[in-house]
Length: 375
Figure 1 (tube, one colour):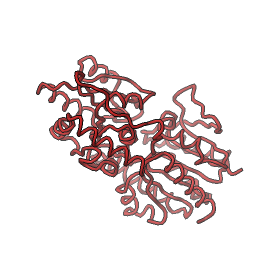
Figure 2: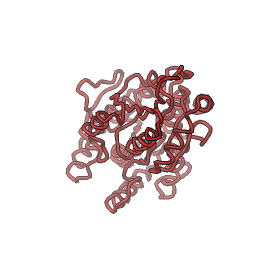
Figure 3: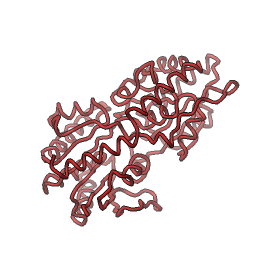
Figure 4: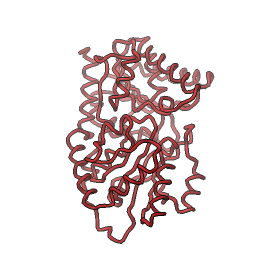
């Protein structure tokens, strides 16, 4: 049986975005070896050979990255993969390098360009140039194939000379299981507050502070609005919002802090609107797909990834990053139940047509097959 080495940065990200796919028909016919950093002592992925490494995702220190490189190479040497699928920056760069040296087929998934590409400052500019150079090295393997979640990221890599149009393509994000995330019309919320949900990694770049300010302005106008917040504290990120800050906002009643929610479909059925006013380098945010699958309109920013999915005024509203008044207007625009229902139905149709997990799984299965047969 052919060996597939699936490499990703960390266990919780794997569980959230990739576990369903790795345990699906996407990997049928392969002996799957999973390589990631383990933050949960109880983590174990069934039907996979689990291999754990220490990766400091935000570190740019030379010694730290040499240790990561050697640790990842040991796994590569032990597994002797026939195919590699890497996701996120460091696994992409390191395994892309190994794949090139040993001429092994590799699928390199770019789930957004992240903080380095969405932030200003000379340090980020230098780091961007280094990452681009290393991606170019990986791209020189004629058996590498790049997968992007939005067209802007793909075009940027093509313009930088990392890959060409023949060695890359777009995927519909993570996809969504439309049977788990069912279309559910709003309940009768006549006397309850308008519930706006922010769900995602708790990073400053995701725009939660902007949303808090917008809700404060609405309340000052006498609007009954509740901001529900669910997410993961990502302490390994330079942009992480601390738990103490989240708890402070909660004590001040600026947010309704829900913590990490397992039943996201259930939560989506309880709210009116999902808002993600991000300026972060997104791929295609999964929460936008899940919200639309459940029939909830979304408010998000007019940036790559978000605008690839949201048609302004059709299944959601696009706003300019950082412009609070536009967020306020967008939420006010969705006070009407009929407007919300209309956008919600449009979002569900869009997901059913183009963004199902079944479609994404088949897409990756075809990529694997093409790489292994040299098509």
